[in-house]
Image (cartoon, rainbow, N blue to C red):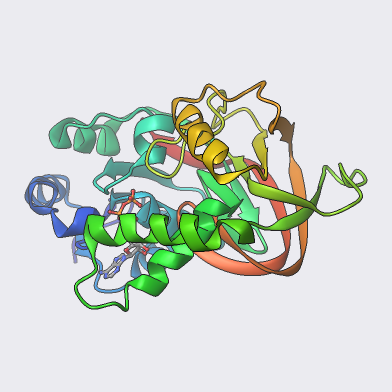
Length: 302
Ligand SMILES: Nc1ncnc2c1ncn2[C@@H]1O[C@H](COP(=O)(O)OP(=O)(O)OP(=O)(O)O)[C@@H](O)[C@H]1O
């Protein structure tokens, strides 16, 4: 039996980046062999989480090649194990907000792989929402509704990739925008900021500066500062919202009248009806949301 103690477990999501994973697959397999590491391609959703959990329990570092969704799975596995092991990330998805914009990892596959194996370890915060972990972003409102619309439209034949993405945005903006959520929220256990429910385009609490493939929602966010950065955007007419979205994409929205920014360690959000929320781009539903920052919960190579 080879001695695997301390050898990384390398995981690759073959469906990330719309299946275009060949360059990463080849380089990672080679590197894993050199290092005596295990190399594994996931066969279904949830498997990366389970493999990461098992690796952490046996004290082995984990390397994940995929996008934000794959990183989220691995982070959930590591934090469920409750045992901290080094995490390397090879950004190979279609968005890569966390790897590229929060960690500023290289885009070149060879360099990215080198960092994932040998980069300096940094303590990084994580977040938890109703028992599920995230490392980059939590949000409720328009973007989570668009992601839910995309899940729904996946059932339509011949609708996939970019066409599916644009169809979901169009459908949600034209027919669902007025259904953006009515919410109350409070920070760090204080009474709600507004006692009455208010209509929002979104409320986002993030660890990293961007999500949704480059929207710089909290441009000043720092992944190791022990704070959640929170951005709320009040409901506003659709045409104004569309212009605002391009301002948010560039991260120039602080100070606008509809925008409010906060910092907190805990955020509680309530709605009278179930609302969609996104965790690192993965969509779920709830009426009451308890979000909490977990300082220095992860060790990540960069
Ligand atoms: N073998 C698999 N088959 C199907 N889905 C998988 C498999 N392995 C992982 N997944 C799921 O694939 C989804 C998309 O993966 P991921 O987010 O990594 O790629 P992406 O969508 O290309 O990147 P990004 O989120 O950065 O845009 C995730 O929800 C992940 O859980």
